[in-house]
Amino acid sequence: MIDYKTITVTPFAQNCRIFVNYDTSECVVVDPGDRAEDIYNAIVEAKLTLKAILITHIHLDHVGAVAKLSKLSGAKIMGSSIEDEPIKTSLPMQAVNFGLNECEKFETEYLKDGDIIEPMSDFSLKVLHTPGHTPGGVCYYCKKLKLVLTGDTLFNGSVGRTDFPMGDYDSLIKGIKTKLFALDDETEVLSGHGPNSTILDEKTTNPYVV
Ligand SMILES: [Zn+2]
View 1 (cartoon, rainbow, N blue to C red):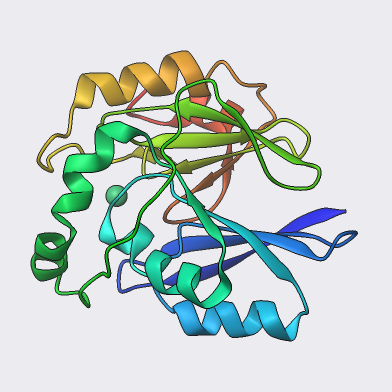
View 2: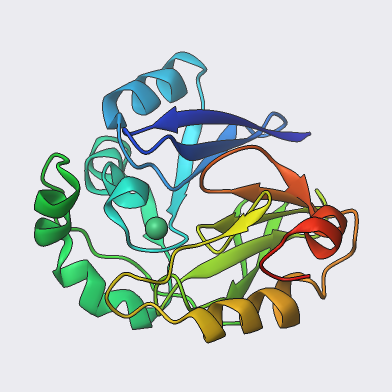
């Protein structure tokens, strides 16, 4: 059985998710923006093995704890898409701009649109490249659990900001309409900030995309 918990981190209330396979005692962390030690200690206490750290996009409030958590656990780092590489090199500047702690450098295995990954047993995810908030931003769709991790691309009732350097509003909306709204209506939307939603709710009530 696979289930997840949400830890809200950073002053931006970023939703870090920990997916746990209770049959194999494996787990996967998505977007650890901060609190690397707390996350690691919770994983150790629960006697879980962290198999991978997934990134939806390279903004500091989503990746601030990636390097430290990977060092502590030995877990591999995956995502986002390679178009985020220029943003990755600007992480120290992001730290200053957002008033957050400086982020250690890390190497990640970039993913492509359409990739199917299985970061732990029985947890298969399809990678959906949804640029706009950042050029390499991705969403992760889990058909089995009927959910999609949308990072800062799609929120409950809103969409990601595109006024950052390399943001692009038209690409963002296109990605949401062609890739996210193509998913089953009942798919649960787990976004990077704020409460969950469903694809149907966003299709019918989100003022940015209806
Ligand atoms: Zn962001």
